[in-house]
Image (cartoon, rainbow, N blue to C red; front, side):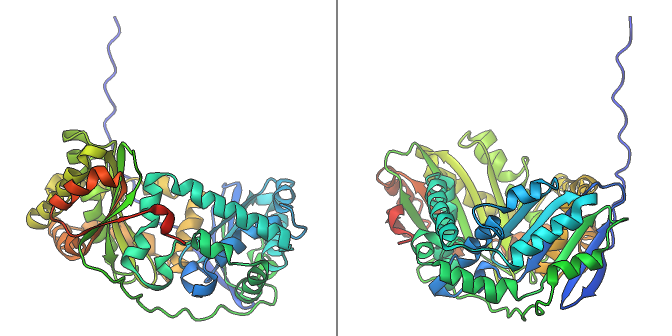
Length: 450
């Protein structure tokens, strides 16, 4: 009779050091490259400082629409994708509040051709009016389709509750504002903010046979250096704090909940302390909110919290979906967990979990060209040092229970929060008022972005 094998003994976690990038000045742009021997796919990303936060209020959504329209390529009518496919390459693009990112993932032996297609798409796209209008209609339709999901509806309502100015409208511009963005405005934005701005080119993969300087010349051409990016904290939205906003969804059997308040900017926050505290509260499966709302009370399948950090500001948010009759108690239970964390701090077990979850998995986290490129994009957008990942790891390794306790008192501001509830207002209003959290306002979701 054979014996059962014993479980292998776990060894000590391997130390991880983020690879040092090579930084080159090429024309008016910068190339940041990491050579990963044996990595057959190369990730190429062009980062430009034309994010949503810089948009004028009379053309909100123009960055996102332009980003979408670039996929139509130099010949229009979605011509870019098949051109890239001939080289085994894939288009990658996104717009954040602080950046306009385009790029390709391509086999190392075809990256020169794929990067040439990237350069054409960014610098000289067709931007045919019919393509722009088609993309705009698709974005508006996608907005309403996604907003039909209660959790998305609640999340997109945060900006107007916390900020005035550009942040009060969703990143996409919202359907009403987006409809006002014409093909002429897209062409103007592209000409002034994209085609004429060099930016930073990120290249990650096996670069043994790749001339990254030539890639930079291909992408930058004679474009000018990027403009200075002023950082000015946005104004707060008017209204009493704390308060509850109900987005009425008659007949809904569930409620989507979002707690949100303003937070410091990316440059102002101590990330290991802040994210470590957030992990304890709601960022891990074993977090306090998950153990309370899911495991003990059985109100939800899961709850999470995180910081959304920008160059000029930030947001801290907690989000979950619960059965409608439990909505009010979910709010008071969440507040109780915040108060307990601020009063009592964290346990040694929670501290160990924070350290492990943010350090042990780094070799896997940064095992692909895409993930390394994503880290470099963050460094470029937020002006972080090249050893940012190593500093972050070291910060989590030395963070203490008192550090996390202090972060809970410093960064959690329940009395400055807005609670957004997407659910049945008639069913919920009375119990929400009884929480005593703050005044309750009911809105028709259809009126949010008109």
